[in-house]
Length: 150
Image 1: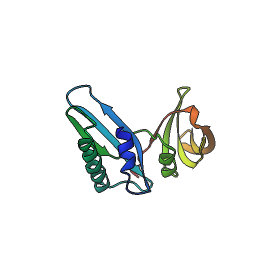
Image 2: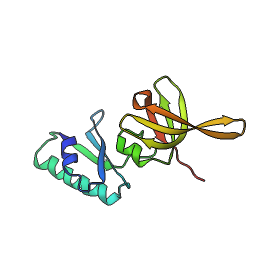
Image 3: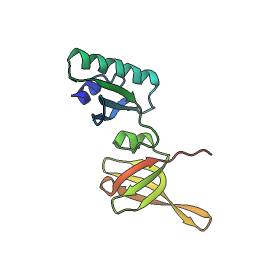
């Protein structure tokens, strides 16, 4: 239900929902909405979504206990989850953990519905070369964008 509310309150076509996490481990229920955009999101975008969803939750009495609502963009340590996130990160360095337990680093070059093309890093002594590597999404367990401070 919260996911539908969040999707209904996407006010800009370049924005998209990454995830809605509802947890009630300790204390009040925590609802976290992860909002992203093709060009990123601002704090004002998150605040607008929070107000709209918070109002709807209260108005329709969807949550019957105390809760906290957080609307945020996924941080750099949050794995890529949607095709739009991959497309948004073309040209950036990724670390991909594969389903067979390997870690691969490289620059994301292309993305399609089922595959991606990466310029994989291959270390040869102190030198790093790049070789093209095509992977299907079913080979990927987790993908993290690598932050460069150069």
